[in-house]
Length: 224
Image 1 (cartoon, one colour):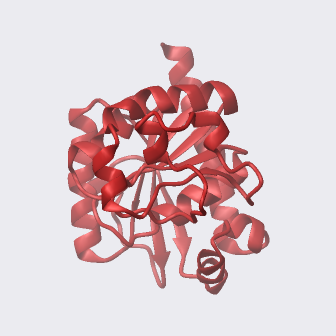
Image 2 (image 1 turned 30 degrees about the vertical axis):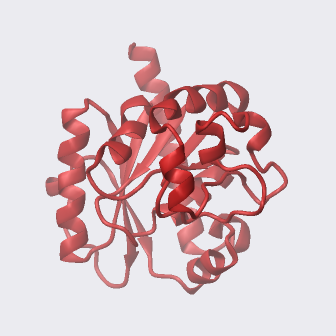
């Protein structure tokens, strides 16, 4: 199962969602943002190294971290030296090795954002209640439709008060994740909130999200 975590606007919490799903689903998380990487990284091989044939995909995964991660380098030079089109093969190899892959994709509507969506079993659309973020999410939803990529769920992140009625605009079931100090602390530490604070409301919502995605992808594979 390959899940593409997407969103039209940066800073809405895609990496937070990706890490939480990776933890709950026992998946490998791939930071596919080659120019604005957000997941933790060390001195080991990165996704750019794999895409440039300087490293192999499975050995490059950090299995010893809180969540298995294939990080991306925070270097424009590395991004320019890699072949993004090879990402499809990389994700297929990781899917075969791990069973579940969560792709933390780049923001925007470019080819780099679209590519993970085309190979995913389901997309997870992330937004906040902010007007600009929802507008960008609508555009991402339209891109997914053009690509015939199914939206498995919409995550409305950092909700402080009542949830705005966005279902009609975005389509798909909405999982609301409240603004949370536990999430903020987990993000600062680079770990999933489901591990850092498993009893937090946000952690429970991410477990609900993971359950829904499991059901959606099982049904879609059966229907094929």
